[in-house]
Image 1 (cartoon, rainbow, N blue to C red):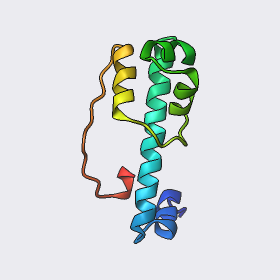
Image 2 (image 1 turned 90 degrees about the vertical axis):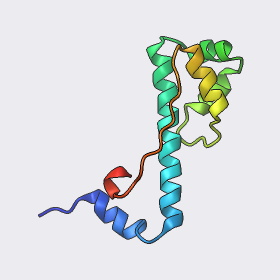
Image 3 (image 1 turned 180 degrees about the vertical axis):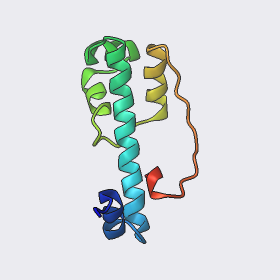
Image 4 (image 1 turned 180 degrees about the horizontal axis):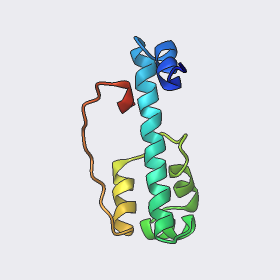
Amino acid sequence: MPKNAVKVLHRRYIKDQPERKASLQEERINAQVAQLIYDLRKDAGLTQQQLAKMVGTTQSVISRLEDSDYDGHSLTMLERIAKALNSRIIIQAVKVNSIQAL
């Protein structure tokens, strides 16, 4: 019977190592935020340059924000982007009790 790869990786590299678990969660959030910005922009049919102009920044800033390795997202900038694209940012806290939530 094959083992679930996620469970194996969790057991080997994350279990009982809170710093790794926190790092993984942070990277996941960065990737989700980057994807959200990208999806909003693409759904609006805009280039990075066009979105940058709408929110008062540069194309290179939008490019960085859409990069999942970027860890400098700010709520203020996310709200500016959402407002420019006729959207809202909603923050929600959810209790995490299992690996499936990772």
